[in-house]
Length: 444
Image (cartoon, rainbow, N blue to C red):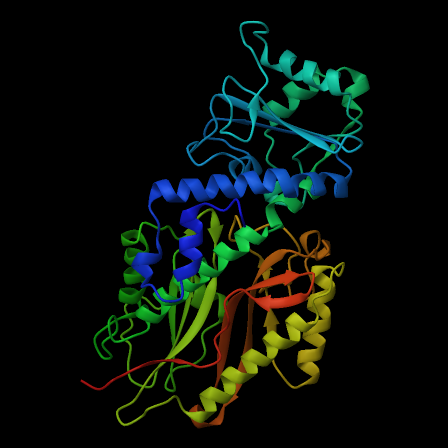
């Protein structure tokens, strides 16, 4: 942490006590943090990932406004896009324990990647790239193409064809998919990033807490769409972004249980929130190039109530139990499909009615790494579900359990999602989880 900028230290020292508005740093401070995180990742993470995957040269090629999703995460804070055609080359010499970070571009790519092309001396950018390859003679040349992982499939057809056409056969036969290296770069979190992640989750939950309060909701008047758009506006007013449109849904005694996907895709529109409603949100933010994804529940108190009914509290405990089952099955090396199958069996053996659809989370919301079920693929997911669990990775622990409520003469669905970290010492939530309902008063 000695290299951490002062602004980051202030951020970490006070995030528990400052109001959410005060936790958001300026654009200049954000840029300093982003670039410091990148420097740490390039110096301390990338060499280990290249060693792990056996790729000693990684080539990323993108043109402006059509960036490879991996390259996008490597650009400095002041580069909002690639410029013209940007080519990045990372060369790992394991014997000398060195890594070169080169750009076949007119400019240095920030302070972390050095320009290695002089257009006046060599006008042909592709030939300049070839010279770099020949000088280093790598054993494997990794390109970002992948059948199963969209984020690792970033090289476009024209760039791939141009690259392969200029390579002599002795080098073209060394070209391999950089899928595992790209996934590793996207999914692995550093200590510095995990400190920031705590802040992101804290901000996310504070916004949810305000949305599910009488500051925003007046029972009998406020609609679910009112809350959705309040959340969107709140994010904008804070100078943040959200990577998906929030949803607010309502479960109540007098109405049947909506189909799971219908509730998420269509929402509840202008339905007025009433006393006795069980509310649920799905909400996430983007900040400092990281993303959150959170689902929580609130209960609208009826006049005279001071807490949610016991039968709803017991239902929430079943949702927490399903979380415990899932995270207890995390094991380094296990595939997403293996974790899913073991967790579903254990939950069903306990009498739960589970559905698990957890996903990697980080520089993208639906990120790369092991998929642990999808809402419509509870038997496993071919490809992304076969990828193994690695440490130092973050997941949206997303799931639901259906619970019969005799008092309402119907089923309800407890839907939860929390950011969780898998590390060398096991699993932990990034910043806690919901174990009690947020409460909204109906009293005037």
